[in-house]
Length: 294
Length: 333
Image (cartoon, rainbow over all chains, first blue to last red; front, side, top):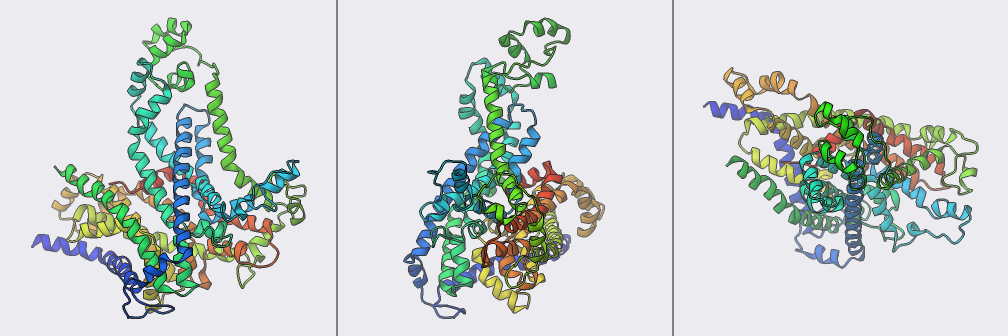
């Protein structure tokens, strides 16, 4: 009796959450998948055409380009942010004067939105009045850096702007990890005469595995969701050369009025994330909790 | 202690970092002076701080300074560009200081820049962003706190299910929710409205807020809760008189996360806010990328800085709390 009463108040408090979970999360996903299996164009229709939209999706050039771009962006962005973030954290961990000032400087881009990041770099990197022109004015006439206007290169600059924004995040996370490493480890390594770089490579980095995983999860989430950075910096251009899946979905939902194709694309994104995520989360939460309970 | 920890590069070219390895440090550095006097204070090194500058330390500082310049450069360029008249910008000297600094672009960006159909500047967006921000932050934190409390202490039926859905929901790309959510919100008349965008921010802030509070409450001693139960405390009594007063730190972290996150949002504002209440980020993008005609880079940059001011302000006053926030944003078990 007591148990049921206790359950009731807690359930009552969770009512809004139940509503959100059922409608806004599960309901929307189910509905999206349902639409992707219909022949909907501007408005959703109730027919069922199977995987037709999915076939169309993967024969749409723009989608293929989007997927390729998010892969390029993801690899460069994640590796770049991890490497730069790690280097910054290690350098800051050398008992540096003015450490907090450096830390503040490295992390401030992360406080700003992707829109702001994209617009700032769009201006700096624009070939006509930006970096390239400045170099010409300084006398280096042959300097060319017009990647933002080149379809085959612009995506690298988007990744670069992303690295600028997110490296500080990696630095902050890894620095916290470095501070947690036992001083005795450094003593032991010193007595054994192991060179510092080897200590970092073979001992410190493995010790920071959890921190790297944390940073990786945050960066990977940003990669899948990348939308505003592209919209602000290149608008998907030149042409469609910097399109990404998130933008593909929005464009087809709200501008190109092909919601079956758009929901098919979003379902593919959803499944891709699920496939990567489920084993990870299962491992971390279910197994981890069972072990903690034992 | 500080003397020992600050001792620079006596070993391995300056990358040493041990705070307590004084004997080894002193011996290998051959600091006879400090060793002789060291006896007076046990094994603590003694004497003036070693000031030897090794090449490795110079390298470290050089790296850090170059990195700092790289991170600061875009902001510097934004500021000087915003202070230049267009005639000067057309010369193409990106990094040079303005010859004749003017705040005209700032006035223009604030009050007259075209953000689509209207030309009332970015100020409209500032007000809209605050109107979206305040209720969204309060609602999502309230819900998150109650959720975290219910899920960690009460564990009612379905708690694990809610937790699992929210956990997955934190990572799933928003695109998969968007269209049905637009349909649902227009069905209840909230699409393209202020309450609508607030609802959307609350919905999608829920996973991170719930996880944040749940993890924090999971770290509180359960015996405290049990004692309160034995004393006959009800769900809400315990929440308001016991749990909430202990939630200070996590409320600060949650507020920082939500304020910066919601302010910086672009996607939801674009889709759900409607023309009347578009947030600053959306209007900023309109000023720069949608408006046709001659591009006024100084106005663009002024508008960009204005849009970044609120999160930057939060960042600078919150300091270490900000780092705590992003670390907990990583959703640890």
